Every structure is written in C-alpha cells, then in structure tokens.
Image 1 (tube, rainbow, N blue to C red):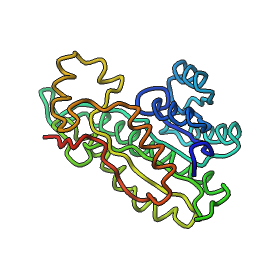
Image 2: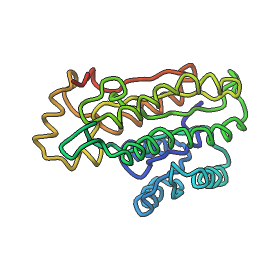
Image 3: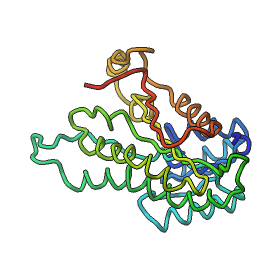
Length: 251
C-alpha cells in the first residue's frame, strides 16, 4: 500500500508525534483525519495539511465511533490508523505524599492503553471493508508504545504499565485481524522532542540527549512519522514492535 493511496486516522494528531505523522502522510499524498481533544490546534493543523479534524476523547466509545464515522465519510475509506494519543505522569509507587493516587494510575491506563484499543478496534472494522490488494492486505494499524514498556524508570509505574499493555496486545491483535487483511504494528519511541520535552530547560534537554548512545540527541518527531510511513508501505511487517531510540536503554 502506498502512502498516496492511504486514508489515515491519527490520534493525538494535533501535536507531537501525531502531528508529525499527519504532516508526513499528507506531504506524500495521503488523506488524513486528525483525532484529538485540542480543537483549536487540531483544526489549524488539519487546515494546513488539507486534512480533516474530529474532536475525540479516545476513552469514549461514542466519541471514537463518531470520529471514525466522520473520517470514513470525509475520506471515503479508512485503511490506516496511527494511535499517538497519550499522557505521561511521573509519580512513584510510594512518595513523600503517600501511595500513588489510584485515579492517576487509572487515567493513564484508560488513555494510553484502553484508548489505543478503543480506536484500533473500531478502525479495524472500517479497514476490513477496504478492497484487498494482491497479497490480501487491506490496511494497517500502528500503535505507539514506549521504551518505558521495557525499561521503565522510577516514577513510571503507571506509564510503563500502560505502554507494556500496548506492546502485549500487538501480536494477538495482529493474529485476530489476519483473516481480515489488517496488519498491526507498534512503535516504541525513546526520548523525542515533543511539546512536553520542549518546555524543559536547555540543560535538561542536553542531559537527556547525552544518554542516547548514537546519535546522541533527542528524537525528531518527523522520524517517527517517516517510520510510520515506511510501515504503511512495507506490507510484510506485521505483529512486531520496533524500538526507535538510538540504542537508548534507560536505567
């Protein structure tokens, strides 16, 4: 499947990895619908790239169903889904103020894991309706995990658990959807220059970059977008997690 033939829904598309992916896809001829809670930014990005926008709460079945329906109507089909929506909290299991707040843990799981599955399952229904290519493929779902799924640091119990779940469901989901011609892949990014990191002091950014073996810098969201585009076009990639981290192993 070529990017020029792709009609993609991208969660978290108003900023960071999602925005970079949307821009890369659109620049290569894809139709794109951004799903995000940030209406102003989402509409602005969609207008810039000639795409569409749907205000979406990924944890809500009704909200996602409405967004998928709108995307399908606007683009005529959906044959790719990239899940980038997520949050990251830094809270220790037991800290100075006591035990990790349960509601914060639950919210992280709900957005990062349940939200990813919610969008993926509903997008898969639409992708399965597409005309099959010569090899039987109809489209692809790309989920976003994190290297924290493998080597989470202090304060990342909730985040690492949520991303570990995204990693864990990749293969069974790929197997579930194989008969429908829908591939499932997962990208596990390292430390990327997202809006969250961009707000940190320069010395902190440099320290984080210095931990990356090669190249010793933070990841560029455009690199995530290019990898997502490669996965769309490389039809034999399925059921696998790709680390995109410059060989970083967090301690």
